[in-house]
Length: 111
Image (cartoon, rainbow, N blue to C red; front, side, top):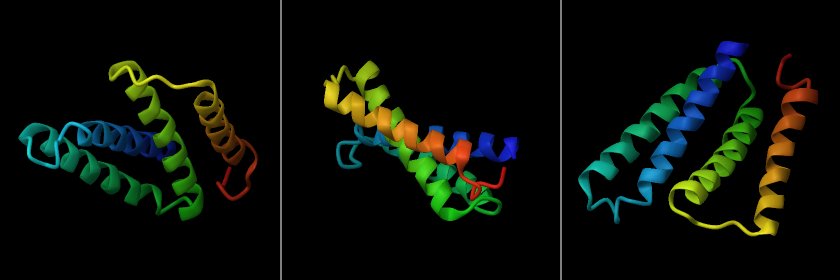
């Protein structure tokens, strides 16, 4: 199962890279950010397809979207200096808590 989680994390990182690059594509008119975006999403979905062989779709999507949202927000905060106010930080914390609850306590994940 740890290899599955490693692949899921790899897929999430690829998606975060792609989403971060997407903001730089200027409507897909800039070549390199567009290439990074397309490649990142392709790698993310390809990796995710293997994870879905062994984990339930709903759980995978909850982890994928939750951690993806948090990581994109953190990258935007650090790299693009997009500030987050207290309600945003609380909301992101709740997302992380939800992902943790699923992974630590749900029997659906298949521990």
